[in-house]
Image 1 (tube, rainbow, N blue to C red):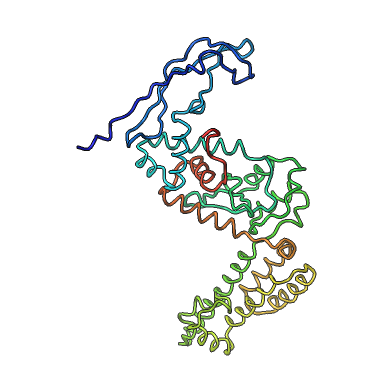
Image 2 (cartoon, rainbow, N blue to C red):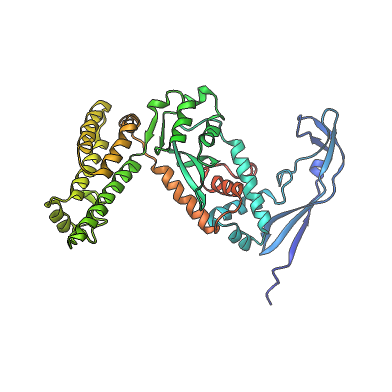
Length: 390
């Protein structure tokens, strides 16, 4: 006959090793036992599928300097509801399940208990983390909810971890990260990858020494802007051709967005035929393909010459979307060319952004912004989450 799951084991511990003389955990003195606190209960690892609880009355000592103190027990952290081993198991299951609800079902604990363990683990990990900025930073934004409600995410590009999460995407949001460090600590930052969002640029210029030569605008975002300009040219031209009952550009949306080397073989005949015509979109596509050669340069000087020629080509064209994107790149040219020196992109930040999106979806969204920050730091922070003696 199966045993009901509601049965539990209760182990009553005798703290004899602590009751004679106890080390004061604040000042390190050895003091005689004064008395014992009220009985406490800790949830421990299950025994033969039964819930197991530890019961003990913890000794207290009286320090002449710090007053009455409770002795630290070896099986749990202060003010914890679980033993160290049980807390470690909860953290492991949380990391595998990703959702708090799934962890609660597997371990038969409440949502509040699981979340409290996650919150404690994040605070523990952040307290242990070295107070130094990463050498290569990536800065990106993450939507908290619909309606242009964003959060700023700072990550370590080499470590692939989230370093900081702030509300909104204003200049002050990023400044809160930089203000944690001294000027000497900020000098160790070698490069910062970001998009062309002005508040992030201003905050970095203000706080990071030599930031004008360290900010690198993400090359993938730049190519995305140029690709969008090509698509606008295609749509404008497609409308003009449809008025003449010409459907040459019908169904070619994605052909123009591929790089030539990545184009599937089945689309090559169509692209070659369209390139041979005098289409505006073919000209815009050629500009996009030419710009991709910028990222092969190792010398800033040669890259600058290339960009000046490319910008002149775009400026003299009759393609309004391409001229607009050329003007935007011209304004940010210095921090586009820094890629030749630092060779970094915001790819790691985009990858973390995707991971954060998975966390958000599995939780069916977060109503509490602080809870969302805790979840991001728990799963993406690269923190030392576990209790010290577990």
